[in-house]
Image 1 (cartoon, one colour):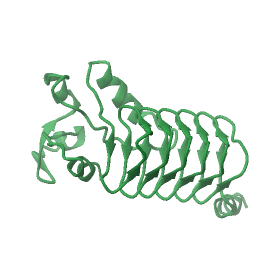
Image 2 (cartoon, one colour):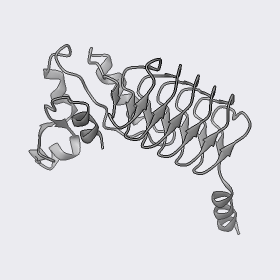
Image 3 (cartoon, helix red, strand yellow):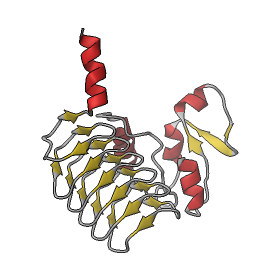
Image 4 (cartoon, helix red, strand yellow):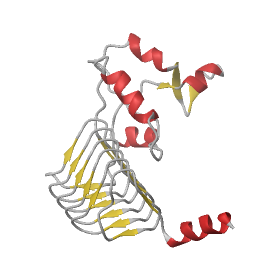
Length: 202
């Protein structure tokens, strides 16, 4: 997906760095050169290349953030990428490393923190404020004026109604309709998920 996003944005792809591919001796992946493990980037001029973080945002995972911090500390930049099939209002503020996938809609006066993902067909309505390392999964909807703190994960098909706040590191489960604020590090699951968990307890 990210390779498609980069190409759709019109950037030249110099190569991919992947420790797993490098260990297996793979020299080409999807028609592009495998440069080696992550350390291969360190030989490059940070002012002449931009990086795209290929680590996905897992629920409460730290890997994506670790990659971002390691390279940012060495002066490398992560440009915000917006797929041409997404619609982003001109007033929207996208921080470094934000990735907006195909079909996403981001309305007026939204602010999105660094290293966040707005995934396929997600919808972020007016005046939402998103922190860093947020993932709004495919088909999820944030109504107007929603606040998401850092590292919030909104799963596929979930809806957060207008004006609510979701605390740091909280998780909104797939298909859930959030109708009240959610505190930091809490997880809100839908009825189907709760039924499955309850069945496993018996």
